[in-house]
Every structure is written in C-alpha cells, then in structure tokens.
Length: 243
Image (cartoon, rainbow, N blue to C red; front, side):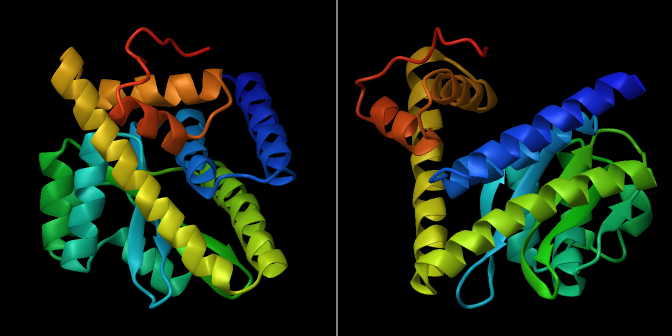
C-alpha cells in the first residue's frame, strides 16, 4: 500500500468515525466497523473485539471471521492471551511469532495457530485511566506491526472509546449495562442469522456474515435489524453485494 493510499484510507476512516459518533449510533455496528477497518488499513487478515461488562468480565462483541471468533472465545474461556494482558495493563501487545509464546499463553496460542494465525496485535480501548475493552488483530504469517501502524490502531480505538464513554456520560450509568446487553443480544442474532443463511443457501458462515453486513450498510440498517429479518425469513440477502 502506498503512503498516499494509506493517508486517504485513514482520512476516510476518521471522517466516517466522526460522522458516526455525532448521531445516535449503534455500539455493535460501531465496533464491527472499527475492527474491520483496522484489519483493512493495517493489512491484517482478521480481528476481534472484546468489551468489559458490569462485573469486569470481557465479552466478545465483534469479530471479522469464524476463525477469529473461535480464538477470541478460547481466550475468554482460558483466561489468557495478549488481549487480556492488554486490557489489564492498558498497553498494546504485539506478538510477531505466536510459536515463540506458546509457554506464556498455551491454550490461546494453540487455538490461534490451529485457526491459521501466526501473529497478533492487541490494542486497548481506553481513555486516560479507564479501559473498556481490547481489540485483537490477527495475521496469517509472522509479522510485527511497525510503530506507525500501532499508532493508527490506537488512534481509531481511542476515538471509538471516546464516543462510547460520551454516550455513557450523557445517558447515565445504566447505559453501561444496556450497551453490553444490546451488544450481546445482537451478537446472538447475528450468529443465528449466519446459521440460517448457511443452512438455506449453502453459504459458509463467513460469507453469510459478509452478506448480512453488506445489506446493512447498503440500506443504512443495523446488523441486528438485518439479522432479525433473516431469521424471520422476511429478507433475502444472498444476492446482496457490497458497495
């Protein structure tokens, strides 16, 4: 990717992010967009994003593929991994070669390699001393993000975090539980809709999500709304293409 191309992508990403945050945004769509945009701009193959709930536990909110989702769920179940370290310290964690870290995070590393990922970068969602989650970016080959790429991931994550925390400030502490519950409910709907599409059209789960996402963006709908309509069999997204 050329420097001019990278600069144009970054400018477009920050404009999109700023535009999203001045409206009544959907936190699930925002976080899906964040992790997808970071994987695209930074040339990584997949990503996942976790938010902390009211009792301090991380919950999977967004992932770009089935493979990334399985790795993130393993991280949560095993209680280990770079994303957890990143969340607890508020500091980004880069692992250029997962095979060299098997002793530190054995279960996470085994699942990551099983799913075809050999390097990972974890970025905290933070504002000053408050950390609300973390994002993993996975690569299918060994690599370390350079300082400029790390700064890009952190900058995008920081702006998204400001938007989420601003909504919590405006709407009060009860919005934290509401945000997380909505996010978890939406993820369940999306998973169910992916299953419906896979069963009825023969799509892979990854392709099913791409179709749901494309229809949502093309028609200015939330992912949850499209997923709900797919489950109810009132919407066919199998012919949808991304704009």
